[in-house]
Image (cartoon, rainbow, N blue to C red; front, side, top):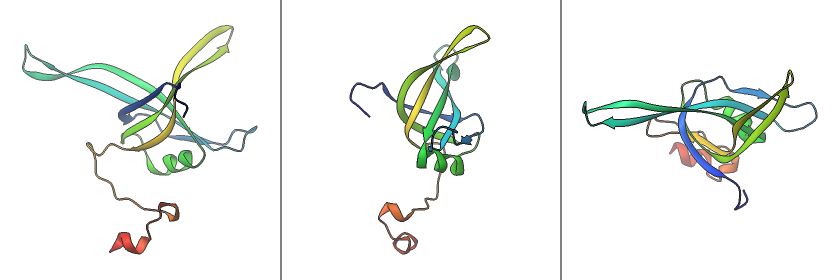
Length: 133
């Protein structure tokens, strides 16, 4: 990512099925899903934690990351997503629409909300036998 891109990190839960496809005019694999982030804040008057504002962010990723995300995450999983923001614009039925999307550079489980077992591949540089030992 370039230094002048809008780079953000989002934590939340996958709230849609991960959709995987291959655009006809492109060789890339694409995955898309939505992450829901729910703000929690402390209400001093009641002495309890209450739900605040919500953010729903559409996330897209490409190539190997897309394939791995589609194999790994399902609706409800806690995730941490880092990437860049941009606005998608389109016209439908004569009306203009826009949506802020996140193009993910990295996605992983939110370890404050779950535990994971990692399956390392040949690219990790760690032999599988060393991991099992």
